[in-house]
Length: 362
Ligand SMILES: Cc1cc2nc3c(=O)[nH]c(=O)nc-3n(C[C@H](O)[C@H](O)[C@H](O)COP(=O)(O)OP(=O)(O)OC[C@H]3O[C@@H](n4cnc5c(N)ncnc54)[C@H](O)[C@@H]3O)c2cc1C
Image: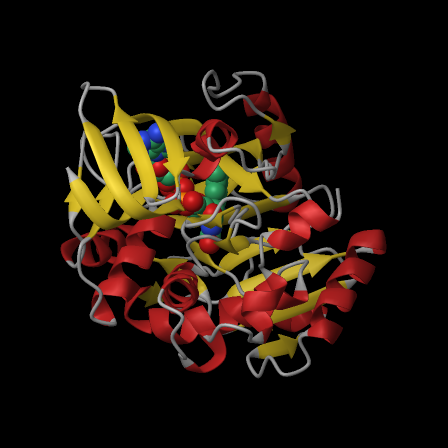
């Protein structure tokens, strides 16, 4: 096998990069995915919430660019963020840094309970985003995969670099040569990066989610509700709710799974934040992996500072779905050294997410 650009990982990072390259006319780009289909891992097993306010100002601005592109995939049921104490101060900081976010509205306690009568919104800061809400991940991933050359059941077990490109070793014994190599393997990126001599390492972290059958006391059109105080979020999922205790724990991607003991913590938080709600039995309880850069919730998108031809599209933390289409546009513009509005090489996003910063700060 041979390709000009090989992308390892068929999650949203790899698929959106391939989609944007294809849209820009690039050819000989393939996506290598070890599962039987693309987008089965973090990009499917997440909360599917479009939320543009994040702890990092550059990520928030990037998320707003992406949200504008994602409109056909969004069900805008609204998003209510509410926190008190130190977490309210943190929400205030984030919202100050996003002064140009036209959608953000501060709401009173009575307005918050009108919008989300099932939610005991903490009394500090309450922010309402009417155009945010649920993302249709299935439709988004299917559309991205349609426009990409994805090779499934292809597990890249090793890689080496030479002056003319990269040599990839696949689990089935075959080899693949490519000129440029894109690391978009989510929580599994580190071993390949290490094998190639990169100094960048990402940090996978586990988070739990649960979907219930039925949720009495939650309006059919309920918005997403999210609090940073005793952190928790909930959104409608069919006739039930998807809830998360917002846990964060470093995880080994080769051996992780849902921890049963977190169910009790989730039930405690649900009873506290959704006091009148009667949740049905859990129908799906799982943990997924979010992957962080060493400087927090910013991303790693751009050329590796040490390994020529190696390119990163990873470290998308808890914002990969919201930022998906902007991620692809930025990655494609950088890979092809092409001007593309705010995604252009040398622009603010390219600088903010440049992998080189992760080496310089070590
Ligand atoms: C619990 C949870 C809730 C979340 N909620 C949200 C949310 O509400 N909104 C939001 O915007 N984001 C959310 N996220 C974050 C979002 O899911 C991620 O940022 C995004 O899915 C990361 O995409 P990715 O393509 O980098 O990783 P992945 O989707 O994990 O894709 C990586 C792919 O690479 C493949 N791969 C790995 N190694 C190899 C190899 N050696 N050879 C071939 N293939 C390989 C894997 O099989 C996988 O398909 C959440 C994440 C979690 C865990």
